[in-house]
Amino acid sequence: MLGPWAPLFWSLVLLAAVWLTGRRLTWYFLSTVYLLTRSPNAASSLYALVLLPGTVVHEASHWLMAKLVGVRTGSISIFPSRGRGGSYQLGFVTVRGGALWQHTLIGLAPLLVGCLLTYWLATGLFEVSALQQAWLARRWADIGAVVAAGLRGPDAWLRLYLLFAISDAMFLSAPDRAPVQRMLVYLAAVLTALYAVGWVPALPPEWTTALQGAFAALAAGLAVTLGLHLTLLAVVWGLFQMARRLVNW
Image (cartoon, rainbow, N blue to C red; front, top):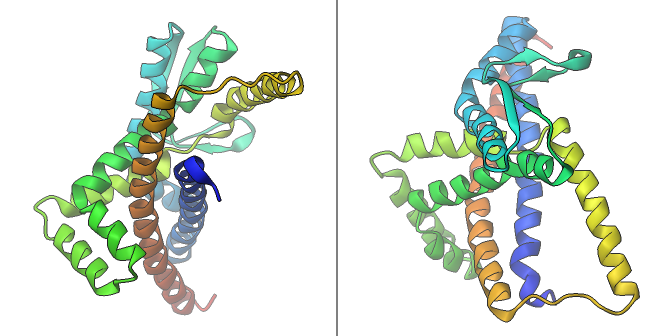
């Protein structure tokens, strides 16, 4: 039914699922540490430490994109702090000047870089094509065999950790989303006007084919990432339940 846009659709669905699972995982992690320490600062600090590689990638992506599009940068931090209104932020990069299109690219940079690294780490860990075939055929034993083979790799656990930290920190914060949302509104208005007058530009066939392949690869990487998030969510949920019983909460 979706035709050539099926890879894009599943990429968006999986991206949303990773984001939602990551938010629940964060809540259970923070709650577990808080129950055991009774210290919000300890919970936040430990969470920031776990996500530090992802924070580095996130803020470095902002900084590099700002340099590429010609926007001046100011201070940069990869350590947690309190933002405006008391909000908690893992890091930040300040920029000066720039047009909407520049700020849109700067805001999107962590998600773009994070998706690329997610694909690279996931495909380096597992035979993704074998996982896809086993999943479509519902061969659960084959899925387990592929996962087990990947986990026997020499740097498998480091890759898993980086996959989690980078994928969990790649999503856009509120300041990142603001220019992206404005740009989407403008693009939607332009496309609506073009559609109303009967002229909607079509992508060249080779572009469509390339985009289909890119989104199919992204969906494969995100599927592995979602599996990792769900596994960690189950583990941290179990720890949360144990902590609740321990402190009679």
